[in-house]
Image (cartoon, rainbow, N blue to C red; front, side, top):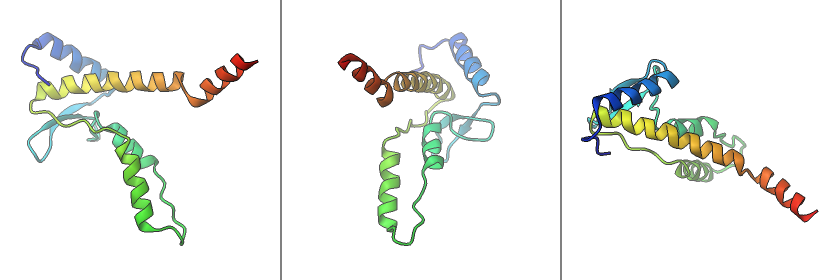
Length: 128
């Protein structure tokens, strides 16, 4: 993300919005020297979807389940979640996080609006 033309006021406004939604949010540097904004417990805000997907995945613990099949299912589930790369500057990390939060909100809102259940009800209503 090119942040050369972002003013200090705009940056502080974005940071204020993020801290309001995630109190204690702070900038962290990863081992590659890139920056990301994390919650107070250190979880990457831009990639919370990845950790939520991992936490919600249930592995089949039965004797007849194959390990390869489980890993395939797990990888397939992770492939459906996009990962946002870390930024080269602190300013870019905060601006990217603001965009990510807005994007997740829009996707969640529209997913709820157009759920399979609602579409099916609407179609059934149209056929009556």
